[in-house]
Image 1 (cartoon, one colour):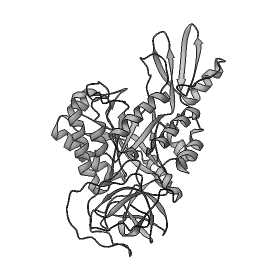
Image 2 (cartoon, rainbow, N blue to C red; image 1 turned 60 degrees about the vertical axis):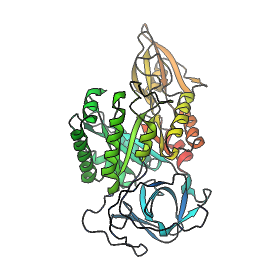
Image 3 (cartoon, rainbow, N blue to C red; image 1 turned 90 degrees about the horizontal axis):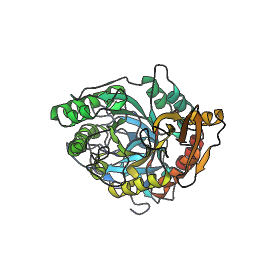
Image 4 (tube, helix red, strand yellow; image 1 turned 45 degrees about the vertical axis):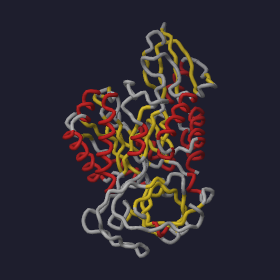
Length: 445
């Protein structure tokens, strides 16, 4: 589109969208349509199945005071207003309604008649990225993630509480993180309900395979997820299925299509965490089930988990070396719209027993404190762009690799270089405190 060209208005009802971080936690009105704003045209109610037009990377300016709604039409609830001349990043379009990235990092829908396209150089908000933080409670009373949201909410756009598990029959159960949602919402952040297949300390291959291969179980899971999102006011979901058998590739994609069909028309966002890979490898045990091309078109956003390049059971090495991460990014952007991609970044490290290659996870703070305890100087691997050191505990030789602000800085340059939508941090509370100023400077300003 050219500058100052008025975006054509059409009629609407359905939604679909783009990613995660999307999102203010508002719900569509289920009863009578909401009263239209003075600058909106009331659409003729109709039912249709339309796919949103991807507008990633384009921007627009608000031509007059505009209502922001939770979905593409006046029948969706009003979540706020934008003043004339506010610049927004376009994400998608459905029948003349445009999903936009809002100034606080959330998402909403605006009638096309109220938007005028703008060149990419205009407006500070166009360079804005999404910053999603995975939120966890690892033991009763654990406030590590909560404290980060409280202190650094201005450097986040959304959180995804690790709260709900799904079983083989499609039952979705978990503890709604009410305190997390209350805090995040009060700071203008979006909330995504994270749905996982973690059982105990591992992602359950058998359970997730049984779920995906049962039409009735998939239907029940979709129904449960929709009810959770509606009941608690989430902006959408983040699906974190791991250890999925490669033979279940087609049914995994089918599940995501069914989930989108249920959530998107109601204004909810559908996002997915995916393991990192730099080629398709459809028979590979850990990554083969994830069809980047198909899932990239189904999902609003995809969080590529570019970490655990080395982990417990492998030889010691970087959690996410820069060359490896870039290799993954290069492949991902050939398979899906680049603005849908959020670069998954680690906030932790591993401490290996070099004799057994078994490792324990450590936070940034633990890694630095341990180096001081044993009088070890932290080294910098220039090629991997990652800090590390070695030490001895008694007679046991150990080696530590971890992530820091300096290693994150190198990865954020990839976000800009490849035009990605932002980052997703695993997990809040483990990181170097310097992350937040860096993120604010490099991604949000």
